[in-house]
Image 1 (tube, rainbow, N blue to C red):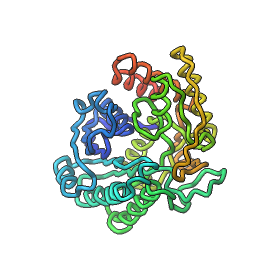
Image 2 (image 1 turned 135 degrees about the horizontal axis):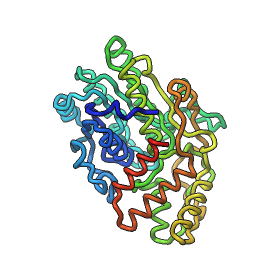
Image 3 (image 1 turned 60 degrees about the vertical axis):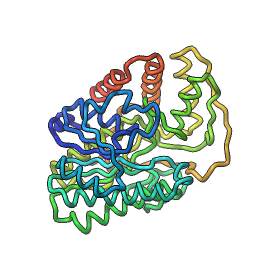
Image 4 (image 1 turned 45 degrees about the vertical axis):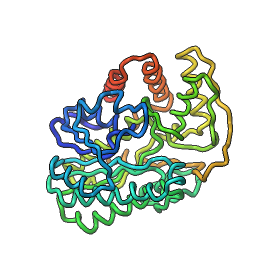
Amino acid sequence: MVDMAFYKNKKVLITGHSGFKGSWMCKLLAMAGAEVTGYALKPPTEPALFNLCHLSEEICSIEGDVRDLAHLKDVFNTVQPEIVIHMAAQPIVRESYKNPVYTYETNVMGTVNVLECIRLTSSVKSFVNVTTDKVYLNKEWIWGYRENEELNGYDPYSNSKSCSELVTSSYINSFFKDSDVAISTARAGNVIGGGDFATDRIIPDCIRAAEKKEDIIVRNPFSTRPYEHVLEPIAAYLMIAKAQYEDKKYAGSYNVGPDDADCWTTGKLVTLFCEKWNKATGDAVKWVDKYDGGPHEANFLKLDCSKLKNTFGWNPRWNVETTMEKIVEWSTQYMAGEDAAKCMEKQIEEFLNK
């Protein structure tokens, strides 16, 4: 697994640091003693995990848009990062149907701009572009997708991330083949965890409903997704970034997902949430099936992570049961007015020491 001691005093630039995944990444790196600079828009939700944990006091947080190449260049020139993790994105499928142009601008041209800055910044040695499990042409079959399969996401979000992969490949071939910069893409499954306040995501929807003691509305209970705790992919990104920093042979594309046993239907996941929540709180929360006839979303999707496992000896640490316990722990403590950052730190330590 990832050796966090490697990151002490390393200069790491994270795009999209103010979001849910970015906040967990910042906290993990700050605990490791890294010199972290974040570049992102203001946190996308209110409340926001980034603000709740006062992460702007632990890292250098810069407000900026990845579509703004001039500003991004200035930041790279000033920071001179050694490692870059690109997570800035418009990440919601349903939102991409409402705002396709913004989604493509952010997810495609944002990637172009980050890669252009890396091309012009000699300090960078390792770059990980975070995409998604939805980059593949989804044939709704029972097998997990491998890294060499066709990239062609259906909806604007998924497709823009497929494009981001192609942009990365082109830059590697055109500019980085003979350079010292190691570049990988990481395709993660459905990430869940404490502190996600986004709309149109199943776990935040569950928590909002439970807090109000309302029924949880589930749009598509029979869709299957590879669910994993947020720390799983973040740790994998950092593991890849370290390995290729030390040896460029590790650069490539990697699926980052749970074992097959944790590819659950949404209905099964929400049932587990209700069980864990009700046990912790004494409530009687339940869910109801209300298909809303919304835009196309994949029904069946899972990843084959053999490459990551065989290359690095990687295995997921927390299954869905444990993950849900951590989500309920974080959420109930937050609702009780306890220190969100302390719970976050506790869970990171438990994860790393498992």
